[in-house]
Length: 342
Length: 255
Picture (cartoon, each protein chain N blue to C red):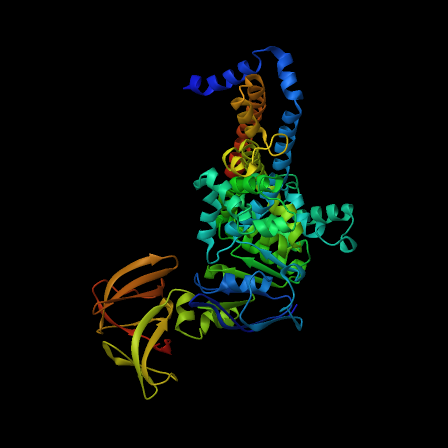
């Protein structure tokens, strides 16, 4: 299904939950919506599912406007953050629900429903839990039931609201790969909300980074990491070292480091330079920095440098010659990305 | 303490049976007694379903939505509990009585409210309204709307969602509220007394009939009907204990 969202706007009191949001999702894509809490991720899912309404903007699925289509006719599967399983029904009845509530002429015969439910439960790896109640199974199993229930209606679009939020780290990791596998095998189109950037980067075809109801950038995980569109995306997607600088005549100059300048296309004026810790190089001294400490960090060495009152952390491969504590040195900032200060 | 609670019950039953089983049967065979019992059942039969429906609707609105005036509505639901039953009765007389706001108009159209069945129902509905709503609001707030929303995204309509998801989730609390509502509807004295007009065989409910007999020194009759009401109370108490356990279990399951 091709989903096209254009200029969606919605207010909650004084704050904008969606502030001119645009996003296109192609058939078969797995997109992660990543953003801090309150950035509008859940609101966007609810709007798509038809549980909330936008003040302006259009939602089209395969060219058809969803404006007048009520939630129950959209056939959009929604997996809730806390699963929202029907607690008084068995697992099998939960999964069958979407088929059983269909109008008589569309409803499959009982035997067909039963077979379909069993097939889905097998697919989710919980084929033997059909007769249990939601409070008799584990969190990870509930998650699978919630997914099976949403998939039973053969949704054109699957929405997942922080589906692993309530699970412990180990179960989470296993479910990530499993969910991606289900998506691929069933040919789904999925939109997945998370605030965990590792989760988003690992699972998604493309990641959309949200801030304050707007999408800051949509890209493949690789490109998003390598070429963040702005400082917010850079800092949200991984460890970042932030340095203040000023851009003048196409050169960024750093406060406290008069010798360093980095060419940039950014506009003149106050700016910030951002780098991943491993993108910073160390230059033999003497220089403006003093080495404060050196620690092992997996296959890397984490070096803490002090510049005036600031501490800058650098990651160096362990096979590189390491500086000694107390030594003075310079740094190489040529890989810095320069963004105008906001 | 137990003595204080059990003694009145014992007295009621012994007084009723003081002249033997035959006297009890005679008292119940009295046409006025029959009409009082019938009237009480009728009032309850109208009041309880009405309050079950309206109470559920009110609890649903308050438990599921945030809207201006929500706190006010919650307080209003409690109003009948904080107002003296006599006032709850008087209000209807003032509104619909012969000299009330709508009285003359109703009179011209041949409708009697006060001193008749509709008045008894109105007074009882008002007094017993909070029971159902109050037993549902905390539960519905706690459960939240997500199961209902899930049902809707799965294609269920409004009625299907209510019948298959909302109702099963609140059934024990609802039954509990209905039970209390029913007990009060049958036992209400104050408000009903004001609007009744005390016409024997026509507008006397069981509690009013007990009073009337008592004032006429018809001890056996009074205590026989009182014993009937007490039995209702005992049954209510037993069911209530049973339901409280179910409701409690349901909440724990959720948590």
